[in-house]
Image 1 (cartoon, one colour):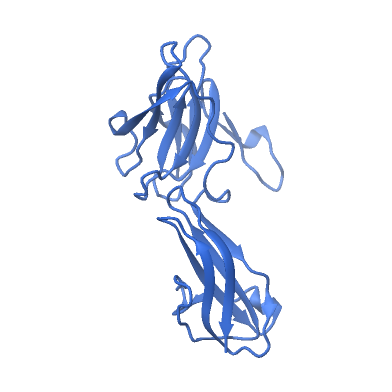
Image 2 (spheres, rainbow, N blue to C red):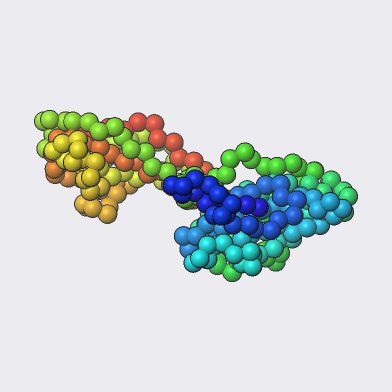
Length: 248
């Protein structure tokens, strides 16, 4: 597998990393160690004459990826991989679809449980399956850093009479384990607003976490913008339906 590193000069074979793989069928990227570094998971589908080939996790170290910094997980003709925190314990798990084992399509797919001790066959759940191909066309997580957090920035808007934000009201669907939180910023001009500090009910670094939470937050000008952050540490997805800012 080739990783071509982007730069102002474009892509080049002089700036690429080569990671060995056998019959690669699917790939997923995520922070599997909760250390801020993305790892690459590659499934092994077919080795020519063999299908009992492990799949790979390439770990990223301080100097990037190294072919020697790899974990091999037992799989058989792995046709897909999905990364998600299935049990919502704060650690991402790996689900591999197993197309066939020993020539039989009626077999088990594997769910490797994540945790501080890493992945192993001792912490694996077998799920009965029938020759699945692939899993999903989109990897879960924010495409920017693969974290399960997404942000929405409202348009900048001027509220000339407003002097204080009393509360933020919103309606949303928040499945178990998910949450939505808000921050606002204000300034005297639209140009200054783009550089203003985000604030919650207790100032910088805090968030509105419940609808209609009392704030009494003084505005720094008539231009206002809010930021909604949607958290989904598990597999559920929150849905934000409406937002109302209550000014005085």
